[in-house]
Image 1 (cartoon, rainbow, N blue to C red):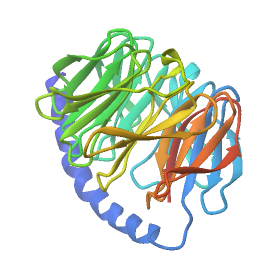
Image 2 (cartoon, helix red, strand yellow):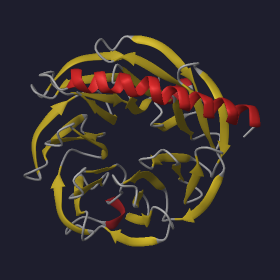
Image 3 (cartoon, rainbow, N blue to C red):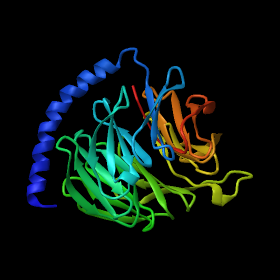
Length: 336
């Protein structure tokens, strides 16, 4: 990274922490009211985003957003929805209340997944077609750096302090550990075939990485990057080749890890302490991604082939409802 870019980013983050810290406190206070949580679903084939009221458990709005929407996250204060519109080669930003398009952010070719730094300003995007992680300043709406990684980058995980980014490359079969201050790769770790999603646990001690074709979940030490546990999922009566781990979510109490298993139409429940699979939850067809409500009482799975989402009761570890959305639902984010 150029020295001028590095200096700008250091100053930017120093100022942003103070400004956003106050804003976050106000946002948290406002969010503590009676307002219902809202789920946002990207529908890859319809080029839309669906909004689900998580109290009523029904779709309340659907809006066109751009071509092939996939990855989806919220901005720092929950007022905007960021969508990877992959075939448009950009990020589309929506108003969280109205789903109206507010503006666009630049990106490299075919953005798929992304993650926002805790500073609320720096966005890291996996660009599948050019083997780069593109770094965006979401305030200035400009590209500030590009980080070369492996072939077909996808998964984007970040430690709680925002110091380390983990990007997975599907064809290279690696997890790339990236220093977010220097934007240099500090380690490349070989994982199983076609890694998809990477996520740190709450304290940053472990990284969970799924491999779609390998049919595995690898849990790595967050500091040493050594393997702690490898889980090979096995479901009675289901062929191994249909068990394709993709999305992952972890409960903040350190009790459960949930893994979407693709065409197996199941979500695996992993005891986050023993790292043993304790249950498989039947959901819709071709489950992709997962998201927990803020109170972690419910979880949503996107089911690409059945064109619906499944609502899961986290305490009971049971699917309780299916909600039709658009065609080929892919990504999901939930915000109060």
